[in-house]
Image (cartoon, rainbow, N blue to C red):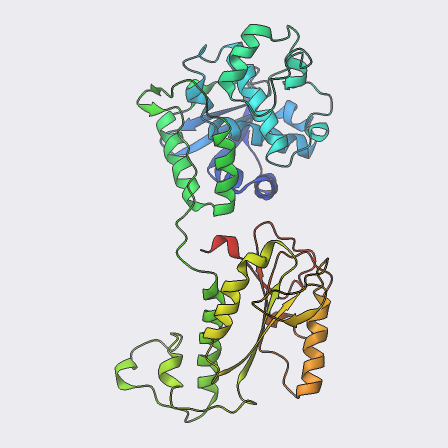
Length: 416
Ligand SMILES: [Zn+2]
């Protein structure tokens, strides 16, 4: 008997997949999960449906319901990793889905799940029944065998000195039911939809799977079907601030009645388009009417190499329309100096808001219209009067714990 998985269960798994990696979620979206009691499928099996252009994921109902949620997610991630790593192609020149290549591919996939995708061995395999290098080899005699080798490496290592008593396979590996061309096309398409960060993780995974064996072709399809590509970065992160300034000016322009009629030649251009230099050219603003923009550069550590660009940017914001305040900070706020600054240990965000309020009192200025903070996110809790006016430019791998949820965040590693 066969029946479809419920929508609720599908959604729950989809949500969990995103947590491990976007590619698992994308693959799950084009997968039909079907429960079966077919004895020939004791755990799970993936095949392709050429007509529908989707994967069919047959799951043994009794087996699956005996598992915890985390163990279930592992089964799915495991199957998808076989696809991503091209195992349907790579097992063909070895022993064509025989037991040795089956163990070899499971060693790669199970290790990848825990070392690359944040799964925990004692959670996904609490009874320690699956194939791991610890139970497949005597690692004291063969310390050269570790968890970052290719399936081909494990294959020959198993032939040479694998333990006779090895673990269970997670799935049945009926890779001949996978259409290689379709798999290759799907992976290519998905890679284009992932973020640079996600593709970077996959690229490092794939690089670790290169082997000394010459890549061959089977059915006209390369073994290494999947080469994650980073998108060409075309936008500079400075554009986040420039665009904000342009937008803020065009809003201000609309607020001013009889400010300036739009030149005739721009009549058909949408009002959302930013044409501040055209419209504001002849209008002098006094300081009180200018927009207050604060820029804070974290100089405590990894972000200091952005300092020059951030500083140069502060000089390009037109001073006749904006009051631009540029500061450096770590545990205190200080004037930026190109000749070097005292850099103490640690970073504080709360001092930024305190500094702003002190300045509002002493200089009689309004609360900032925008506060841009360039940082790696490691600071302390900040409680801004208007958190939505904070724009956090975060460097690669930044923490988010201290960033108020109502404020805006940008991952500047996604920019040039
Ligand atoms: Zn497997």
